Length: 191
Length: 204
Image (cartoon, rainbow over all chains, first blue to last red; front, side, top):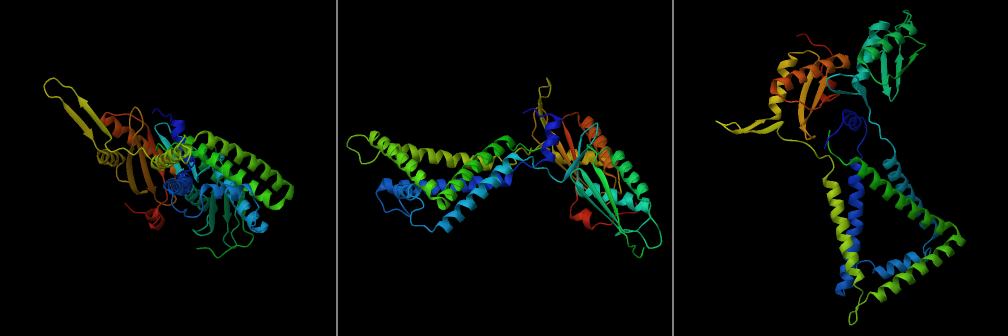
């Protein structure tokens, strides 16, 4: 079981789809158990629980049968949507809210919230505002910063963005996200 | 660092999704289109006739039902067992001891085992007292050929993650050198309840 550092990093950055796999397996087990139960009842010559396999097939092969079309359409739509959900789960990369930082000795993974907190600290220092006046959200390759300046003290947005980009560079976030800064038009009472 | 079979997960999920999607679309079309419903009944009666013929062919003389039902039941049991295995292999790979080697020394042969808590103590020693770390947790994961270390660190709010992570990496390498082992190291900086509620600065 040799695994390359790149593989370990990818495992940490993306979801393994375990919950979906467990849910799908449980569903398949339930369906199989029911089918097995009916087959056993038939083999023993007992009365079926819901319907024998033949009756099931009769219902399926003579659809829509006596069912109301609206109900049947709803069932079909629901199962198609559920199938689409599973398919999307299986095919998408499933990024987690984490980032990889460059590091020589080890694989370094950071929760996006940790990165956002460090960027918020830097933004506060650059803009000279107190805690609670900066809100940073890291979302994939986007860093969104909302800054409410203290009334009467102008903020230089270019300096704040440069500081944040410097912080991202210092931490060696790879690939480096882009910084989007929004300075609120109204100031607040500073601390 | 776990050994969840990711490719298998994705393949089986996609397959089940495709099957459900096809079945659901078929039901939907049957419900809303009269022509499609007629076509479906034709196809289904053809399939049913083919299956009935096969059942008749596989019924042994003197018996009521076909032996094909036994095969179907066996396949269902296999499917259930496979699904149970699939659930059981999720998230596997956590190791117990970090190291366990037999040393065939002439005068005193024996086995050396290093537990995960030893690694944690060594790591704490090499990292020293730090004000920007709330908690450290080390776990060992089975990776071939050497075990992997997963170091979960809760930093204080606002700590620069790059510098802290690289310090932890250096300490981890020093600890590994002291214990005489190699293997991959993963450092994961997280937010937890403790780091969420702890003060963002601390006087040492």
